Image 1 (cartoon, rainbow, N blue to C red):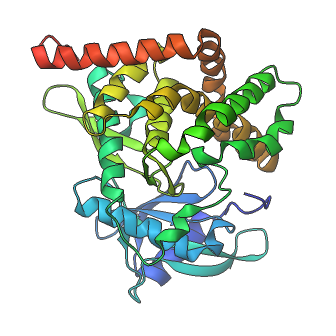
Image 2 (image 1 turned 90 degrees about the vertical axis):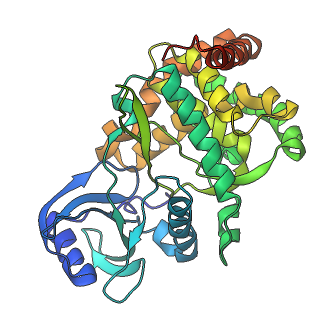
Amino acid sequence: MSEKHAKPNFSLAQATDMLKSLYDLTTSQIHTLPSYDDQNFYVLSTNGKEYVLKIMNSEDSKNQSLIEVQTFAMSFLNENGIPAQTATPTVTGQLMSLEELDCGYGHQKYLVRLLSYLPGKTISKVPLTPQLLFETGKMAAKMDKILQKMDHPYIRELDRDGFIWSLSNLLVLEKYLYVLDGEPLQEVVKSVIDLYKTTVVPSYPRFRKCINHGDFNDLNVLVQPDNNGCHKICGILDFGDMNSGFYINELAITIMYMMIEHPNPIEVGGAVLAGWESELPLNEAERDCLYILVVGRFCQSLVLAHYSVLMHPENEEYLMTTSRKGISILRDIWKLGKQHVEKVWFDSAVQFCNSKLDGTFNS
């Protein structure tokens, strides 16, 4: 976000008033939820239903067409068997409402939506077994395949040229590198960007295009126990980073964030890759660029978290959660190198698939 005060900071009383005026709901419980650059509230209404009140930051609220596509995508996925949230209409029948309010920074306009509440724990809170990682890769691929079938009058809004969180726009990081001045990893980030220029960019024509969720991370995937004492995916959150990209980008993003939560990060790639390829086998160009795209996402997370802390020092703990864990992983897998890491991932993906086929797999 470009504006220092773009993130909303509404009180519980203001959120309660919004719920009453926009949705005719009375709350019995309400509290804030963690968020990156929007504001989210958990809501239990007196009718017994649970919701998430989502108030977009003032910058993103300026693009209603984009938010409309994202809201439609959530419903489209839900209708096609993917556990995504859906929006509740206002009393006037709208799926979102642009409200001009003051939350401490003067009157600004904020887009407000009331989303269904999905129960479950974030995947970051449970053991990442090979089977759960396989299911995560499979779910990410299924999701993108369904999104590719979606049509909407504003679908071109997802092109999002220059969007800093799109993995296709990694080169945008160059203008933010100053936030790492004095950090040892600044040189690693520069080297990754150079490798991206020479390896990934020339491969664009051979990548398969799609619509990416764009943030399939350890806090946006919900799980709950199944009947076998394991966990299954029961929810996918936060479609705010949706963009037109490539299938391989989604896989790289998924691997990177699952690595953050695993005690042996390098082991993650094989199981996620096996799950992904059970839906969407990679072509040669995609396979050759997977490692660079994964380290590229680590670089995005590192640089943009540092930048966001400059804008919002009061939110440093949340903003740096992923980045702090990612620093050592990025350092380690960069040191191991492309050839070594790819061999681990691709060999273990084959072993994983073989063990599932012959029944020797143990989750």
